Image (cartoon, rainbow, N blue to C red):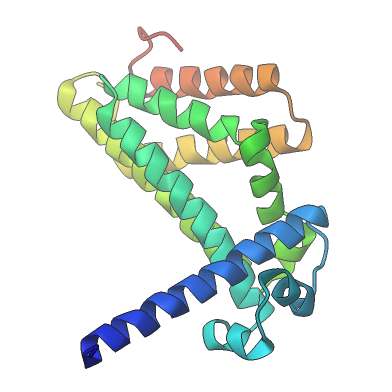
Length: 211
């Protein structure tokens, strides 16, 4: 017979799977509706679940949209952190981060997901501003880690304030992303990435590195 712990583990797994079904269904519905408003009922029809199932995991549709936003953002942040960690040099790590971020604006596999997260439905959701701030903070933390690595290696001799420099580069990168989302183009996104990297390397004292 299954013990109490086995039963609890089984219930926990089932609940996680149920929650994931709702989040995935919300993503599909928003994508199919070009980011416009989608009802909870439609999402649950897509997931094949009941209203009771929804409220086991979310207090409101805003909570669901926040979870969807967080999931995609955390996946991307983890990818960029892993790429930066194995880069041969700090300048290469910064280049990978910036280019990877700008790629989101035109890569067909990723652009749709990003547009969902800046859609009218998402932006109106309660807690959106806090989630956006959390993602911006994660990006600044990644950039700060790269800058600190470069300063320690002597690659970025002009660094005086890691946090301030990371904030400036992060703000410039966010602006470039917003511009490219409005006018998507692989060539323009690559050019924007090169401008951001070039500016950052000059500011950090790594102007000798290629953009």
